[in-house]
Image (tube, rainbow, N blue to C red):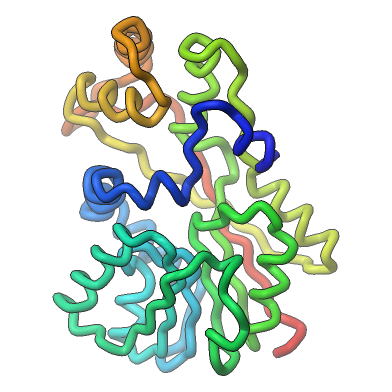
Length: 267
């Protein structure tokens, strides 16, 4: 499924998308200033129950959503983050928070060696950063460097952007949009590796837009559009799909993520 998506004309990989500074500042950073986002992160911390002083590996740590609070609580944190745009925001957040103990490795997880990581970690986190094609190899490396608990967060149902892509790609580009492997596929892959992970759902927060024009502009870029006719298709779609809320508009329909976790055999 991953390879089919990557071979789709016009498809932009997660790595490429999040290496764009505008995408990071306009979408990623903006969404993480909302109260609902912090509530979700607080719930993730509650379910992971990471003790103070733990040695933690955060794969695809982004701008420090998990890493900075953990470092401030006394954890020894290492972040794997290949995106230069993400690392720039991460360094700003580290400086403003005073969490100076965070080690940042500027590589993809696939390219990190065991020698780069040092001593085993008590906790490994990969929160919505599982863009690796060879998921088995990625998980095996997590297992090898962890003496405690591995925590993976991934999509349980298609997120809003995936539903929009599925609905609009045929009209915009004349072909079907291949689906993203979801948490059921991930759990099955773990099962086939002999890892019997716990799994718990989490409701994803709605993305709030101030008006239709903003969401049209976002998806005009996101869906590889270039013509006025394509923009009109987007306007028609979002006029029907957006529903009013207290402070703007949200896309209709809830989506869910999943937290998968297990204790490693090397513990």
